Amino acid sequence: MTAPRTQMTNLTEEQIGALLQSLLTHAATAHGTYEAEQLAGRYDEQWAAWYADHMTHGLAARDYTIGKADS
Image 1 (cartoon, rainbow, N blue to C red):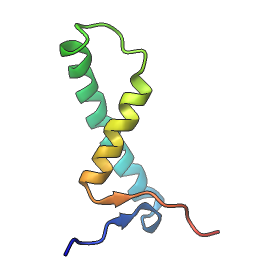
Image 2 (cartoon, rainbow, N blue to C red; image 1 turned 60 degrees about the vertical axis):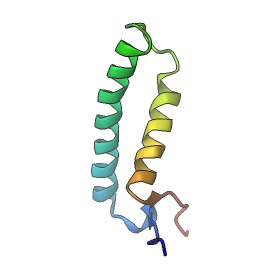
Image 3 (cartoon, one colour; image 1 turned 30 degrees about the vertical axis):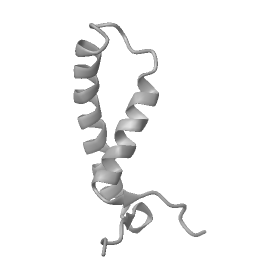
């Protein structure tokens, strides 16, 4: 049986901020490597889509899901 994923709506703003900072830092490092190795040092005009995909996978790897908070 798979453990349930953690809804980000169950985290405090401080916890979400720390999580996003960690994901962004990791994405920035990985994207630098991607630009250098896969794009031969060229600027990636699609960087935002690359970051979003990388961060989405990072959330899933940490067993997080994003859900809309109840109003």
